Amino acid sequence: MNSFDLRVYQLVIQIPKGKVSTYRDIAKALGDERKSRRVGKALAKNPNPIIIPCHRVVKSDGSLGGYSLGVKIKEELLRKEGIVINKGKIDLSKYIFKSFK
Image 1 (tube, one colour):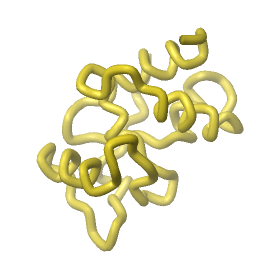
Image 2 (cartoon, one colour; image 1 turned 60 degrees about the vertical axis):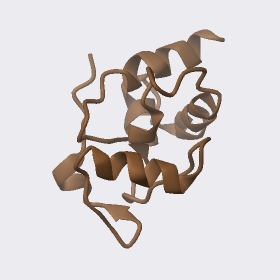
Image 3 (cartoon, rainbow, N blue to C red; image 1 turned 90 degrees about the vertical axis):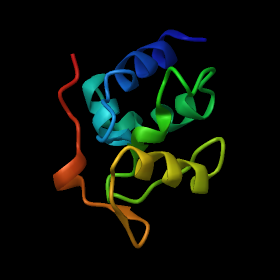
Image 4 (tube, helix red, strand yellow; image 1 turned 180 degrees about the vertical axis):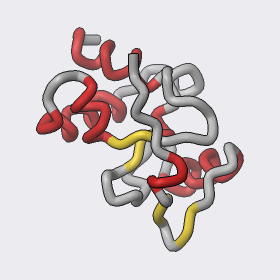
C-alpha cells in the first residue's frame, strides 16, 4: 500500500454513518481535487471495506459511483445507514461530509 492510498483510507474512516463524501472532496482534502480518479482507484483496492467504509464515497453529482462488491450492495449499505437514494442519486445538500481532519 502506498502513502497516497493510506491517506485516502485515513480520510474515509472519518466519514460517519448516515453521511457521504465525494471522490473530489477527498482529493481536495488531500490537496489536489484533480486527483479524484486516483482516490477512486485507491478505494477500488480497499483491503478492508468493513473498517474503511468506501461505500460512503460517491460522485460529485450525487450518483453512487462504483463499489468493489457491486453497486446494489453499496446502495443497500447506504440505505441501511439512513441515506435516501432517489433515482440513483443522493441529495448531497442533506448528506455531505466535508469536515476532514
